Length: 288
Ligand code: RET
Image (cartoon, rainbow, N blue to C red; front, top):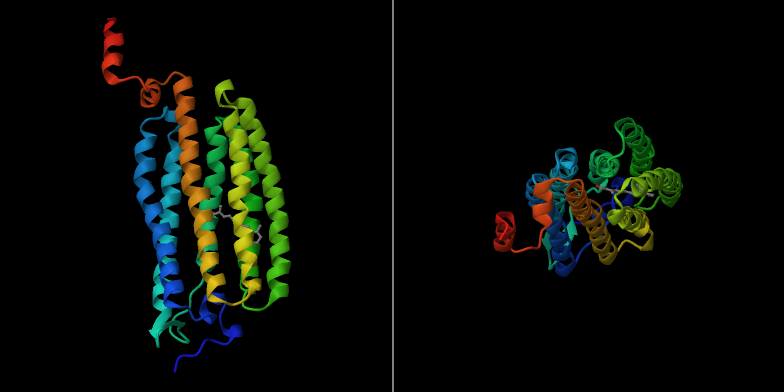
């Protein structure tokens, strides 16, 4: 007979909770939409890079790399979800042997994606190369420490609350350090943006805080109880956070650098942004 694992034997609450058919399907759907969206947007980012002045092309190219990396990781979460739950007696029961579900892969994936997402900012803001390198490194250090301390702490989510909370607080301290570094980049970005675009870095700042702030909520959530709703709501939070902090963020940065390219006189970007009908453009080129 299938009984849930004892809590000390597994690391994530997904392995402890029996799901209704609705909860299981919702979880599958959330993970599927997540990896599907990330894979699909590889195409968007690669194609959009062609509209940009050469110095900005790397911004959407990095987004495409992030999409591929996150898409693979989320696909792995999806298959683990499908493998671990068995349909028994009208419910989805987690396996007691052979396979466990883990969110730890996410943290491994962030180790790659987070430094890339952060580096996109000073590149998009066209900071000088030495400044860019210095700032990218100064953001990557607290970011990696935040992720790895969080990774260690999340293994406590099946009931070791002191481990979860202590490492959660340590990780949050690194997050605060990171926020300070990001603020420095945003301030430099405002100073270095053309007058027409100065609102963009300001808005990106609030967007960054709102979307990255979802991850610690997801981390703390298991303390509300080992229930199917908590499991599904947490996957939903992760998914909203992933799609906004990587995909929509990449779209925002791509639009910012497209406008910047156009303002700096790169004609293909100006044409891509033009709302003038093609016929009248041709007419004005002819001088009619
Ligand atoms: C953890 C542990 C608990 C405390 C804090 C955390 C913050 C995580 C963040 C993750 C961001 C991830 C992104 C991934 C994109 O691919 C590690 C959950 C503060 C901010 C943006």
